[in-house]
Amino acid sequence: MGLGTLVKRPKRLFYGWWVVLAGAAISSTGGGFYFYGFITFFLPISKELGLTRAVTSAVFALGYGVAPLNVAIIADYFGRKNFATIRGMMPPIYAVGIITGPIFAGYIYDVSQSYQIAFITFIVIYFLAGLTFFFARRPKPPDYGEQKDTYRLHTDCSKGFKGW
Image (cartoon, rainbow, N blue to C red; front, side, top):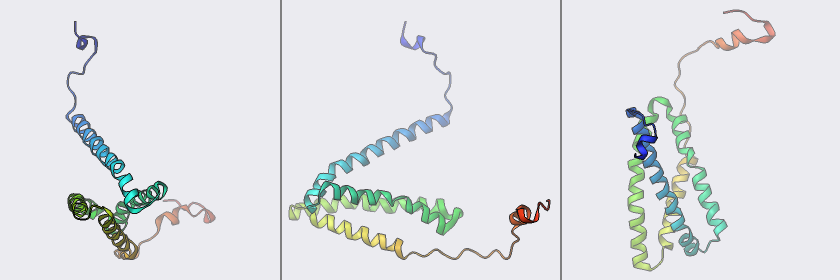
């Protein structure tokens, strides 16, 4: 008698759950690579730039802490209609940096036996990208004409309920 006879298995699993399972596996693998990559480069970055571990941690925390601003600014500035399109166009642009960054850093290390020039270059690029957020201005919302504020008309407590 096998273990399969002791455990009641579902006859069929809905296709959507397979998609969720595959997405979870991909996300967890990607997240693992992401965080293990951080751990791999944490000490070399601290050593090359002469920073303490606390300062290096603070810099990374600031970088990770402002990441949600991308999503919030896109939503606020471009609205729901364009949100998915813009978010869909961002990963290929990120991919350029993800692919070329390590190659550039490896080349700099091969030439100079130090990552310092590469790290400083990346810091300058991040700083310039941060300036784009600083100088970005919220666009003027579209003018839909004058509309009544029906919520205030029906809920003004000082005048009593007026009915619908």
